[in-house]
Image (cartoon, rainbow, N blue to C red; front, side, top):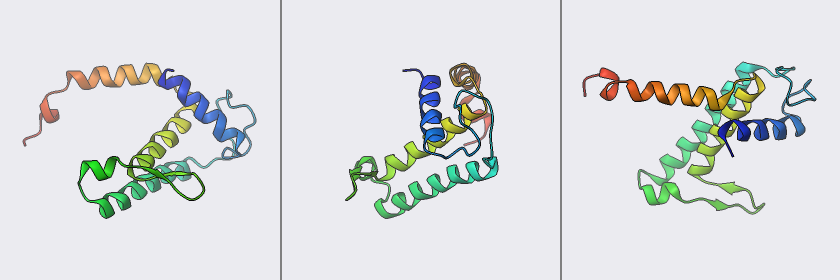
Length: 122
Protein backbone atom coordinates (compact mmCIF):
# COMPACT_ATOMS: atom_id res chain seq x y z
CA UNK A 1 0.00 0.00 0.00
CA UNK A 2 1.33 3.44 -0.88
CA UNK A 3 1.67 6.19 1.70
CA UNK A 4 -1.04 8.14 -0.15
CA UNK A 5 -3.45 5.20 0.01
CA UNK A 6 -2.65 4.80 3.70
CA UNK A 7 -3.36 8.51 4.25
CA UNK A 8 -6.74 8.10 2.53
CA UNK A 9 -7.59 5.05 4.68
CA UNK A 10 -6.58 6.88 7.85
CA UNK A 11 -8.66 9.91 6.89
CA UNK A 12 -11.67 7.73 5.99
CA UNK A 13 -11.48 6.14 9.44
CA UNK A 14 -11.16 9.53 11.17
CA UNK A 15 -14.18 10.88 9.28
CA UNK A 16 -16.16 7.74 10.10
CA UNK A 17 -15.31 8.08 13.80
CA UNK A 18 -16.50 11.70 13.89
CA UNK A 19 -13.16 13.48 14.11
CA UNK A 20 -14.04 15.73 11.15
CA UNK A 21 -17.38 17.36 12.03
CA UNK A 22 -19.25 18.59 8.99
CA UNK A 23 -17.43 16.18 6.65
CA UNK A 24 -19.41 13.15 5.56
CA UNK A 25 -17.42 12.30 2.43
CA UNK A 26 -13.76 11.54 3.23
CA UNK A 27 -12.91 11.99 -0.46
CA UNK A 28 -14.09 15.61 -0.36
CA UNK A 29 -11.37 18.20 0.07
CA UNK A 30 -12.91 20.07 2.96
CA UNK A 31 -11.94 20.85 6.50
CA UNK A 32 -15.53 20.96 7.69
CA UNK A 33 -15.72 22.27 11.22
CA UNK A 34 -12.26 20.99 12.17
CA UNK A 35 -9.92 23.62 13.51
CA UNK A 36 -6.56 23.20 11.75
CA UNK A 37 -4.74 24.75 14.73
CA UNK A 38 -6.32 22.12 16.97
CA UNK A 39 -5.29 19.37 14.54
CA UNK A 40 -1.71 20.66 14.60
CA UNK A 41 -1.66 20.81 18.40
CA UNK A 42 -2.94 17.23 18.57
CA UNK A 43 0.12 16.27 16.51
CA UNK A 44 2.28 18.14 19.03
CA UNK A 45 0.52 16.34 21.90
CA UNK A 46 1.47 12.98 20.37
CA UNK A 47 5.12 14.14 20.22
CA UNK A 48 4.82 15.16 23.89
CA UNK A 49 3.49 11.70 24.77
CA UNK A 50 6.47 10.14 22.98
CA UNK A 51 8.74 12.43 25.01
CA UNK A 52 7.17 11.17 28.23
CA UNK A 53 8.06 7.59 27.28
CA UNK A 54 11.57 8.71 26.31
CA UNK A 55 11.98 10.41 29.68
CA UNK A 56 10.78 7.26 31.45
CA UNK A 57 12.77 4.75 29.36
CA UNK A 58 15.92 6.78 28.70
CA UNK A 59 17.95 6.52 25.53
CA UNK A 60 18.14 2.71 25.53
CA UNK A 61 17.03 1.80 21.98
CA UNK A 62 15.89 -1.67 23.09
CA UNK A 63 13.54 -0.18 25.69
CA UNK A 64 12.35 2.57 23.34
CA UNK A 65 11.47 0.02 20.65
CA UNK A 66 9.25 -1.99 23.00
CA UNK A 67 5.49 -1.65 22.84
CA UNK A 68 2.71 -3.52 24.59
CA UNK A 69 -1.04 -3.70 24.90
CA UNK A 70 -2.75 -2.15 27.88
CA UNK A 71 -5.70 -3.69 29.74
CA UNK A 72 -8.08 -2.65 26.94
CA UNK A 73 -5.85 -4.22 24.24
CA UNK A 74 -4.72 -0.74 23.09
CA UNK A 75 -1.11 -0.62 21.85
CA UNK A 76 1.08 1.64 23.99
CA UNK A 77 4.69 2.80 24.23
CA UNK A 78 7.21 5.11 22.56
CA UNK A 79 6.89 3.68 19.01
CA UNK A 80 3.09 3.79 19.26
CA UNK A 81 3.18 7.51 20.05
CA UNK A 82 5.47 8.13 17.06
CA UNK A 83 3.01 6.26 14.86
CA UNK A 84 0.22 8.42 16.28
CA UNK A 85 2.16 11.47 15.03
CA UNK A 86 2.34 9.93 11.55
CA UNK A 87 -1.34 8.99 11.63
CA UNK A 88 -2.43 12.49 12.59
CA UNK A 89 -0.15 14.07 9.96
CA UNK A 90 -1.40 11.76 7.21
CA UNK A 91 -5.01 12.40 8.24
CA UNK A 92 -4.54 16.16 7.96
CA UNK A 93 -2.69 15.90 4.63
CA UNK A 94 -5.48 13.74 3.19
CA UNK A 95 -8.13 16.12 4.52
CA UNK A 96 -6.66 19.05 2.62
CA UNK A 97 -6.25 17.02 -0.55
CA UNK A 98 -2.48 16.63 -0.72
CA UNK A 99 -1.14 13.93 -3.05
CA UNK A 100 1.06 12.42 -0.33
CA UNK A 101 2.96 10.10 -2.68
CA UNK A 102 3.87 12.91 -5.07
CA UNK A 103 4.89 15.24 -2.26
CA UNK A 104 6.95 12.56 -0.48
CA UNK A 105 8.83 11.84 -3.70
CA UNK A 106 9.48 15.55 -4.28
CA UNK A 107 10.58 16.20 -0.69
CA UNK A 108 12.83 13.15 -0.28
CA UNK A 109 14.32 13.82 -3.73
CA UNK A 110 15.13 17.37 -2.67
CA UNK A 111 16.61 16.17 0.63
CA UNK A 112 19.02 13.94 -1.31
CA UNK A 113 20.46 17.04 -2.99
CA UNK A 114 21.14 18.88 0.25
CA UNK A 115 24.67 19.12 1.66
CA UNK A 116 25.79 17.22 4.74
CA UNK A 117 23.95 18.62 7.81
CA UNK A 118 22.33 21.05 5.37
CA UNK A 119 25.60 22.98 5.25
CA UNK A 120 25.71 23.73 8.97
CA UNK A 121 28.86 23.40 11.00
CA UNK A 122 28.98 20.41 13.28
